[in-house]
Image (tube, rainbow, N blue to C red):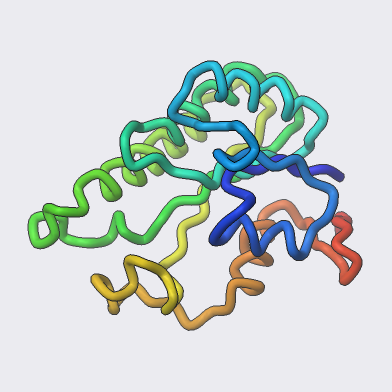
Amino acid sequence: MKIALTGHTWGFGKHIIKQYKNYIGFSKSNGYNIDKLSDRDRIIEESSSADIFINNTHSKKTFAQTELLIEFFRAYRDTNKTIINVGSDITKIDILKYPEFIKEYSGKKYLKDMVYALQSCKGFNLKIIYKSFGFWEKSDLAKFFPELIVDTTIEEAIKELFKDLNTYYNNNGEFFHE
């Protein structure tokens, strides 16, 4: 089983690829910027051999993470692929108290709402999953939202990411189904 993921060179994505070796990674460091339509098109095309796509990277400038979800849906809705969208618990804050985080909040809220809208549609095979996590203590945003700091490890969060698929990885970084 092969995965493709955005944001594989930092944060959560970097931890995923430490545990799983059969992947295709897309990030700015290897020439993919989700803010650019042409790069999102390349990501969609180059993900064709993957069974699971992890939509992990968000944009601070645009709604590109959600746009990538929509474009992936259009391209692969009639396949048995899975797209896992990594959200954020920032959507649980009272945005009126933290207006300086409106971009982060609205980007992740739009992603969450679009996942639920697409999940409610009928007549397609693509499996669409939304997973949301709080912040780990070392996260840049943890200092602003201590109430959202999680006590789970990143490794536990990665297992949670794949839980709905009955898919797990072994110590060699290989995925298998139950």
